[in-house]
Length: 216
Image: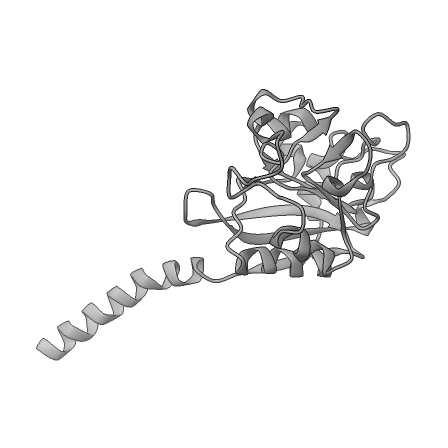
């Protein structure tokens, strides 16, 4: 009886420990956009006239590290051509212990880029024009990712558009583990897959949250 009781105790402990062990390992999968998600995206982040259809997009569901410790599972929508590279980048960021505040499709914020930024949300696909332009953004193709946008703001002539980003105008020293600086591990992780960083743009504008396959 004692042996049976001991065995039962071991099985119970193993069952309790198993989920925590899974949370400590990286996991990511790439799938077509589910039907219910297509419905939710239509008229929000995607609409008729967008440069890509749902068949060209992929959903990446991935684990990531949280700023306060622990892990979470989030989602990015990207072009199918870059999905394998993005999966590798996410794995590399996990290995580097680089934290992400939130990672949800922008539809959670009604397709509103400003609302997504205010929530410090990391996102990718959004069928919209580039900031200050009438041309399609790389986001409209699923070819770009905005990463931790509060700590990595759009900076124009030394100014930012979100109050919470003001401490991060100075890019000479890291003030948060979410902040991305020139030549750091995050920039290198994207560069290894051929992606360029908006924080390296010349001129009076920097988009330090922005990575894309074209560098723009």
